[in-house]
Amino acid sequence: MYKIRTYNKISVKGLEKFSLDKYEIASEIGHPNAVMLRSHILTPEDIDTSVKAIGRAGAGVNNIPVDNCTGRGIVVFNAPGANANAVKELAVAAMLMSTRDILGGVDFVRREGPGKTAEELHKLVEGGKKTYGGTELRGKTLGVVGLGAIGSLVAETGLMLGMKVLGYDPALSVAAAWRLSRDVQCMENMQSLLSKSDIVTLHLPVLEATRNLINKELVDSFKAGATLINLSREKVVDTDAILLGLDNGKIGKYITDFPMAEMMGRDDVLPIPHLGASTEEAEENCAIMVADQLIDFLENGNIRNSVNFPNISLERNGGHRIAFSNRNVPKMLNQVLSVLADSDINVIDMINKSRDEVAYNIIDIETEPTPELVAALEQIDGVIKVRTL
Image (cartoon, rainbow, N blue to C red; front, side):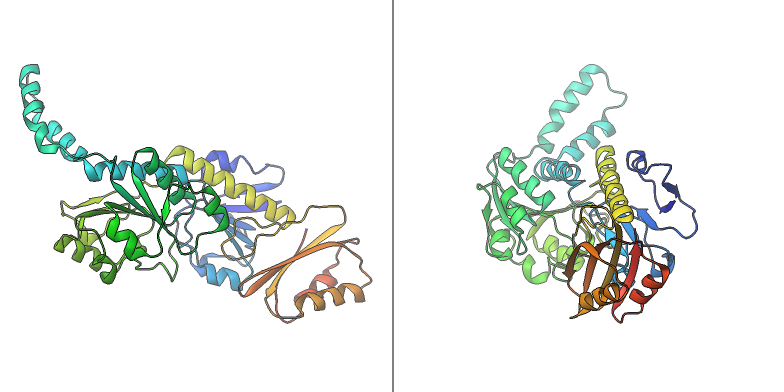
C-alpha cells in the first residue's frame, strides 16, 4: 500500500486517480511515499525520509526545496501546461483592463447608481461613460516574453484579436517553436521587444537567469506609457524598477497577479489576488496530471515532467525492476552491473539518463532482488537512492 500525503485542497478528480486498493491518501499521514501539494511551502524538515516523490499540482515549484530533494534522490514533479488556458484567459482580461477602464466604470455605476430612478440612472450612465472610455487591442503591438505553454497561447490569442505580436524567449525549445504561429515575430533581445510593444506580458519561471529580469536598465527600454503584465512570478521583476518606471512614465500601467505592499494605493497598478490558475478546470487538470505522474513513478519507476530528474520511461516486459538515482559521474552504471553480474543476475532490459549533476536508471532483471542485493547497490559510492518495484 502506497501512502500519499496531501497539502492544500487537491481536486477530487486528481485524487480519484489513486485506486483505493493500492493507495492511502490523507492530509495527516505518517511516513508517506509521496507528497502532493499546490502552494503550501515545504521545508526540508517537512519531508520524511520515506518520501520518494513530490508532486506540485501547478507549474512553479518555488515552494519546494528542489536542490535538497535532488540530493536525497527525491523526484519533484510539476504540471506544465495544465493551467495554461486559465492563465491565458486572465492575460486577455488584463490586456482588456489595460486599454479600457472597465473596473473604474463598474465602480462608478455601483457607487452612484443605487437609489436612482430609471431615468436618473440612464442620465448618469450616459453622462459618465465618456470618463471611462478607452482604446481597442486591435492594431496594438503585444510583446510576449516567454513562449512556453502559456506564452504561446497568449501570443496566438493576440493574433486572433488583431494585434501585432512580438515574442522573445532565449530558451525556446523545439517543441515550443513548433507550437508557435509563424505570424509571431521573434525578437533577438528584450530591449528590441520592449521598445516596440504597447503591452508586454511575462510568462517565465523563476530561475537564476530570470530573477529580476525586468530591472532598472531594462525599464529604460520600454515604449513610453506601455503596460506591463506579470502573471508569471513575483520575482521575475525588480519592484524598485517597476516603481521607477511608473513614476517616470516609461511604464503606464502595471497589472500583476502578485500584489506587493510597496505598490498598494496606486491608480496605475492593478493588483490581482493570484488568480492565474484559479479555475476549476485548471485545478482539475493539474491534479490529474500530477496524480498520473506519481502513479507511474511509484509503480513503475518512470519519470515524466520532473524539474530535477531526467524524463525516462521503460515499458515492463516481465521480470523484476530496480530503479536507482546516482551522482552523474563516470563508471556508476558499470559498478551496478558488476554487482548484478557477481550475483549471477541476468538483465532483461535497461535505460539510463542524466540531467545536470544526477542520473537515473531503470533495470529489469530476471530474479527478484534480495535485501542483500539492494544493500550492496546502496553501498556503491555515488548511489543516492535504490528502489525495487
